[in-house]
Amino acid sequence: MKLLLLFGIVFQIYFITAQRNVADSAIGTPWIGVHYGGNWTAGDLADRYGFLNHVGVIAGYKTKSNWFYGLESSFIFGNDVRMTGLFDHLVDSQGNITDVNGDIALVVVYPRGMNLNLAAGKVFPVLAPNKNSGIFIHGGVGYLNHRLRVETQDQVIPQLELDYRKGYDRLTTGVNFHEFIGYSFMANGGYFNFFGGFYASQGLTQNRRTVFFDQPDIPVSTETRMDIQYGFKFGWFIPFYKRQPKEFYYN
Image 1: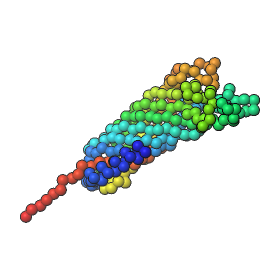
Image 2 (image 1 turned 90 degrees about the vertical axis):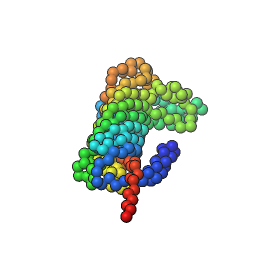
Image 3 (image 1 turned 120 degrees about the vertical axis):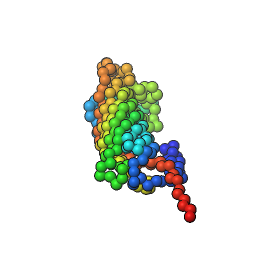
Image 4 (image 1 turned 60 degrees about the vertical axis):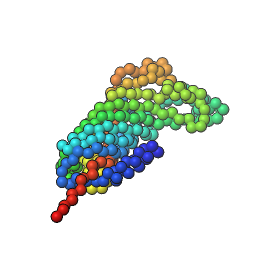
């Protein structure tokens, strides 16, 4: 709801400040947008999770020389968990996990995470309708966080409540690098502005838990991990133009 409210305000500002035709020259302009990305995993991350989705926002400034500087953030989610045996020690002789009332419980797990990156790059006006569109390349560095979300629905399972979940969530954080190459289109007029292309990231991360409850006798690795994601990203953005002064002619 907060995101929808933000973009409602952005829309109002956008149409109030008016648009300027960008067909004639490259312009400097701030812009804000939303994006979606689909990513496959590799490296150490592939041992834990499969395909991951990214949904987020990006905000920045494109200069008159088509350099771009910005900040992007994504919420990471999915449903492909490759780790097995996480709750085997909680299963009874009948093959079930029971809640505090002795009823059969349902436990579900999901990958969750987020990243926050500084980005710098450039738009090259190639195969473009104007000097503000073209091949878009950027990269940067930031922060990556990912973990396993454990849900027990409305049931109470004492071994999986409150801080006990931290023994299973595999919380991992660290430095994140990313690269993007694609195409950015800024319309000569109107709000049909988009970007899309190929995306990759490499996280130099570490486990932040000291024990895994499903493997209590195995020391948690303190070595640096290489968490790789690669795939595609596309988004829609709004540039902000200053209102052009009107020209008046008198006889």
